[in-house]
Length: 186
Ligand code: HEC
Ligand code: HEC
Image (spheres, rainbow, N blue to C red):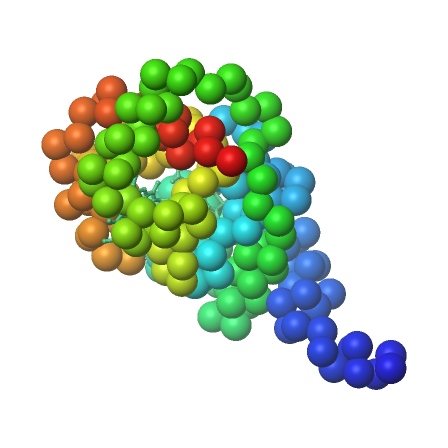
């Protein structure tokens, strides 16, 4: 029995992966359990593994340029990235611990804008994402605003340019409503 359990252990949960995550301090910035209590810092818990893998490769190659992510991603092998991504993807997703109250008018406006712009076509109706399309529910509101503005203004380079095109011409006010809606869904 014990041997079977050992064989069934996914590679991602190996002590080597956990040691690597500890050594590179991922949790110090992204939060204990991968749910971020830090302003502008994205949560990683329950994020799609393929999306995490792609983003880590973009950071490692210097294509998505975030100074804070240069050291953590430096020199990781593809296999190490796959293991780290699977490890964070397996953590339970949750809203940020100090999520503020819902502003009903803003929430409804955000819901309408998201429906009109078909965000759920790719991110799925529950906004949990799929494969290389990220989970965007339970994400921090301030990070969502920040990153949607960056897509719009061409400051965030993704694995593709879909999000840059989709955010073209969207006002700051509409972005704030969309982020409020996404962050306050269950
Ligand atoms: C010094 C703080 C810091 C450390 C340590 C750190 N990160 Fe980050 N990470 C950031 C910041 C800041 C961002 C947000 C960048 C932005 O504004 O787009 C980020 C973004 C990310 C993203 C993109 C998430 C998304 O939703 O777009 C991933 C994936 C990620 N980090 C993984 C990791 C992993 C894995 C580790 C450990 C190997 C790690 N980070 C260590 C600061 C850090
Ligand atoms: C055609 C498919 C598609 C549609 C429609 C779409 N997205 Fe995305 N979205 C993606 C993909 C793919 C990514 C990852 C891109 C990358 O590599 O940066 C992404 C990334 C994001 C991110 C970054 C999340 C993170 O953790 O870094 C946010 C936020 C987001 N989308 C919000 C939205 C919103 C809001 C809408 C509706 C206005 C929308 N998306 C519509 C495909 C789509």
